[in-house]
Length: 402
Ligand code: ACO
Image 1 (cartoon, helix red, strand yellow):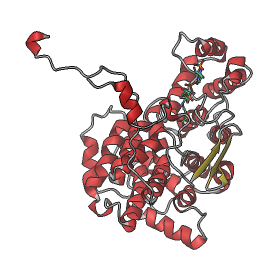
Image 2 (cartoon, rainbow, N blue to C red):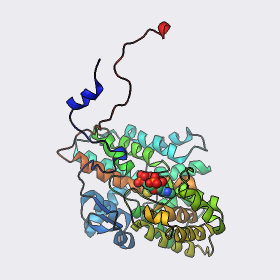
Image 3 (cartoon, rainbow, N blue to C red):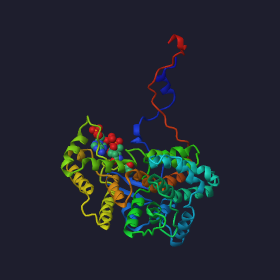
Image 4 (cartoon, rainbow, N blue to C red):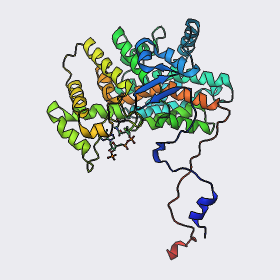
């Protein structure tokens, strides 16, 4: 009989770190977070500066290549991404295989995973050119696929990409234009969409990015890896939190009910949590939440929505929670998801699309991290260990004797 305890002593030492709260899984030069100070830098540039002055494809370039592009580099990059925005026409048939009421994230998992079947010329990850083409394809096609998922969901025909528009404007066009009707891009709303994409572009080794890295560490093709990231992002503790936060604000319903929900969040016998509050890394205000709050006001202002009850509830909830000893002691602050739901709803998206939009933006982060890993000469397949707690060795018993 194998002595499992003794086995541990012969297999070498390893750490037991559930949730990897204190384990660095890799080296990375892409994104820096100081959670205590509430700082987020991409390649050294503060997120607020990028969100204020940058455009999304400029941030994509920065994440992928480490520097902000020159004008010529930016033009070339924009051109390369833009020419990949279309998806194979056969891919549109994938959508019709899903029920109309399928969650668009379920559709995204399936359709993005299938991209590798369409683009055999960009699945050899040992070839830098193929890696680059796969990256461009994923960044470019994600908004198209996301918009197709949305259009299918609401029963409207697909709208093809319009490549003279910016990344964000094109996405709004594909989602909200209808055939035979002119659709005018509102520059304030397009800029807000751009900012939302920038804010979600990367966030170092979060659950979905770690999933992409883990999947990629086995040599899987990038399309499959991104599909794995989408699956992980779907959860309400991760990308699904903005949908959950908006649902929660709706459930609260009125500022008078806030205290009741705060009490529930503090009650250890109640599984309820304030969605959009708290973060594994930020023990201070999430810097993205501040920009998102400002963006929410800009969008509502532009649309002439003077009194949005959900925004009122959110702001009051934040005010109360930030002065409550439970939230202060546990360092629970609003995260990026707290205000993004309100903004996305005002832009016209149903809640089921929120996580999809997150996936569109995060694709570049996933790809940049995947690329960094593949290009690391010390890269190894990810293979965590475990603390075995099951039965010790025993003999098989025939079924008649059990
Ligand atoms: N409401 C009430 N209490 C909370 C909340 C919350 N939103 N978040 C954490 N806590 C409490 C926990 O109950 C726990 O209390 P305890 O120490 O008495 O047991 C303590 O704070 C620490 O919480 P953990 O879950 O251990 O912290 P962790 O770092 O693992 O979790 C997480 C971070 C998952 C984001 C958590 O704060 C949460 O569930 N928040 C709500 C969901 C959410 O907004 N997710 C979005 C994350 S951001 C993103 O993905 C873009």
